[in-house]
Length: 261
Image (cartoon, rainbow, N blue to C red; front, side, top):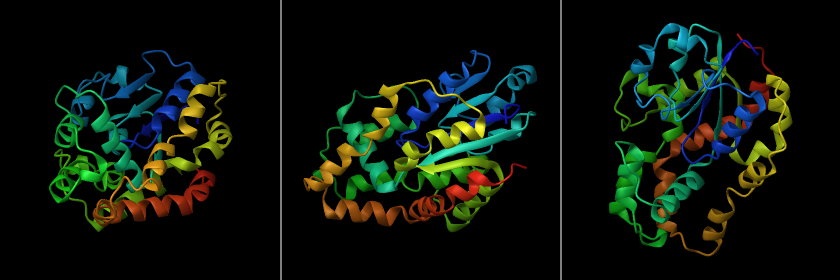
């Protein structure tokens, strides 16, 4: 496993920062050995990455970030993927909450435009008009990233279909060596360390931050700050991601135990 380039598909608002940070610390990667996508490359187009000098790409041992499945095609070293998936209701509500509470992003990124569309709207005031903005950027987002749809069409807002869902499942079966749901990571730290021969540092702050990732959203739901109509709209728009979440929930142990190709 040490000879493989590990690619971590960090699905937006799924708690992946804690895992990504821990992996980098555990392996003490040099700057030439890891890449945080897209910040270190300053371009979201995989074709741009393919133009990097081959010797530079061959040095990479770890690629992490909001990178879609398919980047392995531009790396000659053996590769394997890992990812975490969060229930789409929690993930999207977390994104809305962050968008309304943080400083407006800059640059030409999907997050910037999503944030601009949602900014200053309270969760219980979001209606039909605003759900269009949410759908445009975030609905079935995990299916989009894991299916490799970006490789077919670089426009990140294409509508997902059941074909994309089946392709995402196939990619997981053929190319991923570790998948789990966000809420299950606390029970998987030692398993993933054993799988990849990593030795975690005692980074208690990162672990605690991940452990409480869902706390705020759960409290909002309990406090009835989220309207039932908004919840139902999000669930309706994310049927593919819900199926993908359930699939990973059911099959994560089997995928962990399978032999790599």
